[in-house]
Length: 320
Image 1 (cartoon, rainbow, N blue to C red):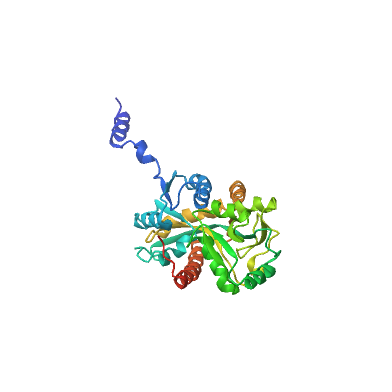
Image 2: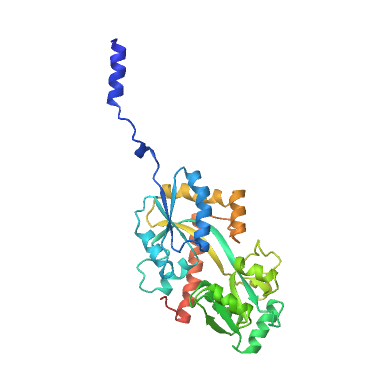
C-alpha cells in the first residue's frame, strides 16, 4: 500500500459519518390554539404548505383548542425560544388576558411577533323582514326599536359578539343579544326570522345573501372585502373608524432570537404573495395584510389589545 493510500484511508477513518437523523432539519412545531377545521386552523395549514418548503424544514400542526385559545397560547409561551415553535393566533389573542384574568401569560410580553398574515371580515346581515337596505337605515331602525331588535351570536365573548358590542358603543345603538352554542344555530334562527341580524363569517353568510335568505349591508373590516367587494365597510357607511375582523398573526415564544425569527417572517411574507397560496386563501374568504412584518404585527396587536380589553372590561365579560 502506498503512503498516499494509507494517509487517505486514515483520514476517512478519522472522519465521523453524518447520521441520517442528524442531517434532517428539526420540524417546526406550529401551535394552533383551536380545533381542526376552524378558520385559524385552515389558514395555518394553507400557509405552512408554502412556508415549510420555503424554510427547508417540515412543519407539524399542533392543535390545542379550548378555553378561548388560552390552552394553546400557554403551550406556545412555555416552549423553548429556539425558533422551533411558533403559534398561529387569532384576534382572540388580543382579548384573552381581559377575558381570562387569571391567565398566566400576556399577549404582548409573553410572545415575540413574527408575521401579520391574514384577516377575514365579518359581514353585517339582516333578515329580509328588516326594513333597512343600507347602514344608515339599519342604524336608524335599531334606534327606533329601542333595544328590541335581536342580535344572534355564537356566544358571549365570541369575536362576533364583541364586534356587535363595538358597534353598539361607536354608533350609539341598542339591541338584545341572543347567544347560541355555535354560529350554525344562530344562522338557522336568522333565516327563520327569529333573530333580526348577525355579524359573522362572510364565508358562511355570503351564500345566504346570494340566495336572498339574508340581506348584506356592510363588512366590518377597515378595507373592503375581496369576496364581497360591492359591500361598503361600516366605517365608510356611517360608523367612522369602525374596524373588526377575524385576523391572524404568527408568534414565537418571548426571547426567541431575531436570527431565528427572520427566516420565518420572510417565509410568511412570501407565502401571502404566492399566487397559488393567495387563491387558496381567497377561496376560504381570507384577505392578506400588505405589511406582514414583525413590526406591523407588534403595532397591530397593541391597538387590538387596547380596543378589546377596554370593551371586555366595560361589559364585565369573563371567559368560562
